[in-house]
Image (tube, rainbow, N blue to C red; front, side):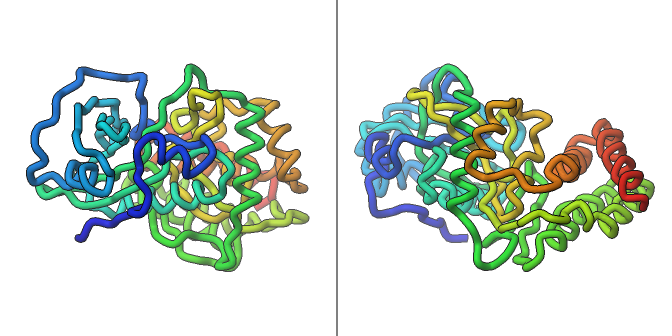
Amino acid sequence: MANVALLSAASPSTSSAASLLPRRHPSRRSACFPRAASKLSVVAAMGDDPIKEWILTEGKATKITGTRSIGGGCINAAQRYETDAGSFFVKTNRRIGPAMFEGEALGLKAMYDTKSIRVPLPYKVGSLPTGGSFIIMEFIQFGRSRGDQSALGRKLAEMHKAAKSDKGYGFHVENTIGSTPQINTWTADWIEFYSKHRLGYQLELISQRFGDSAIYEKGQRLIKNMHPLFDGAVIEPCLLHGDLWSGNISSDTDGDPVILDPACYYGHNEAEFGMSWCAGFGGEFYNSYFEVMPKQPGFEKRRDLYLLYHYLNHYNLFGSGYRSSAMSIIDDYLRMLKA
């Protein structure tokens, strides 16, 4: 598959990349963790290496002075490339083709273009000659903390408010939530989209992988009866990060919030809080968020419905340790809805 250039016009050195958007962007746990530095290794000649080739041509560098491993989570490897034109952040995966990184790059660029919250600007996605794929993006130096909760809530709401889709709910491509495929077929109705492509898809995977007919059948009952949970709510297709947990939230050296490693799609803004059980959102976050995006009727009733998608996904990714949390949510809703 041919390499895909995300940005080819501007010189993406650290300084020029920063000028493209007023101080706001990074990458994820499998992205840029400059604090977890290891030994610097001197990079040799370019050779048959599309990463070095891009950096030394379209990246406007004349010399790569070193690379540094900065961790890549359980899916990807990640490195910081240091050059005379600034630093670049590079993720690689030796087993998976470019489609995963293409989805990530499109999500990053969509969020970047809102000029709201800082995310790393993607530059290049391509195939590795020995198999696998890579993504090159802006390197962002992280600050010492995750940043201000109030600022995070406000800027996230500004992103949701700024980016709406006229195609309905979904995204331009399929992408991944962790390593699970995330289906983003454009759908006019939110409840239909969330039922089929979020809860329903995860339940199907659980049934296939674990043979868990009990959670599958109860989950399907919930899907068929959950419409009343949305009574009175005004729902619009907002651009969502899609996987907003603590490992994907940081701040830059100015203290501005940054969000990383997205699983973007256009959906109900409340779905953004689906990973709140491991994101650490507090009162300041929600207060600032709802000042920009007012709370909709029934918010509290729907909150666990959006947690459920991620509990089901964790069940699929990590096994039955997450089953009881998912089943508890389903049972509570079935009682509430008398279904």
